Amino acid sequence: MAERNPLLEHALSLNGDPLAIREFYANWVQTYNTDLLLAIGYVAPQVAAEALIRHLGDGKLVLDAGCGTGLVGLELLKLDYELTIDGIDLTPEMLAASRKSGAYRKLNEADMCGPMHEIDDDSYDGIVSAGVFTSGHVGPDGLDALIRIAKPGAPIVFTVRDTTWDAEGFVSKIEQLETDGVVRIVGIQLSPYHTKEDVFCQLCVLEAA
Ligand SMILES: C[S@@+](CC[C@H](N)C(=O)[O-])C[C@H]1O[C@@H](n2cnc3c(N)ncnc32)[C@H](O)[C@@H]1O
Image 1 (cartoon, protein in one colour):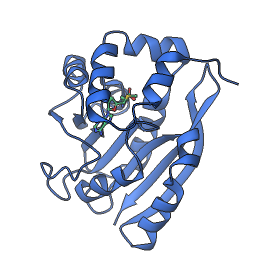
Image 2 (cartoon, rainbow, N blue to C red):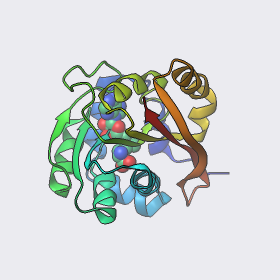
Image 3 (cartoon, helix red, strand yellow):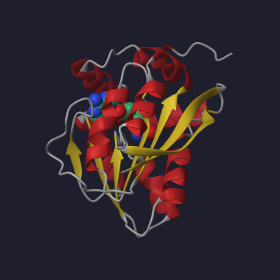
Image 4 (cartoon, rainbow, N blue to C red):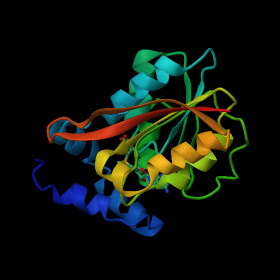
């Protein structure tokens, strides 16, 4: 059983409210990496980056959706330094931290709960999102825009925190997307998320039709 972690409890209770999310992450940005990586063993960036690389074809242009401070971009470049990585996030301060990481080509503010019309259809060879499909953040409908902006055949890799997976209708959404012919489900597996707290996620790999 994980111990109480007030910071994460706050994160999970943001109710998808963009103003509350921006304020919370703007205040957290300076200590985010150490609080997560060292204190709780947050491995979602590594797990998601490895899965994207396993499923990426020859194309090298990828999007990190909800890039935060840039942990996923750095993991991706360790695995393939030829990648071109763009990032989007709701919180300007987190985008600024990603910019400092040096891992990204373009970084833009975008709301994954909306249609993201600022990004063209069929833009990316692969999409990855770690730690964003979780309670209080982005729900299952956030997948629609990611699918639209993925090129046909592109892998879309994302983590869903275990408690969120059960509570927020991810299974039915993903099954419906496959029934509708807009994605193929490549794999869904339980993976480590916070290794020091015994918290897990579902690591999902879809392929855009
Ligand atoms: C837990 S952090 C994960 C960041 C990074 N992917 C990682 O694994 O370290 C969640 C991020 O999602 C962003 N976020 C939350 N809601 C969002 C939304 N609707 N659209 C885009 N980004 C969002 C937050 O600003 C924050 O940077």
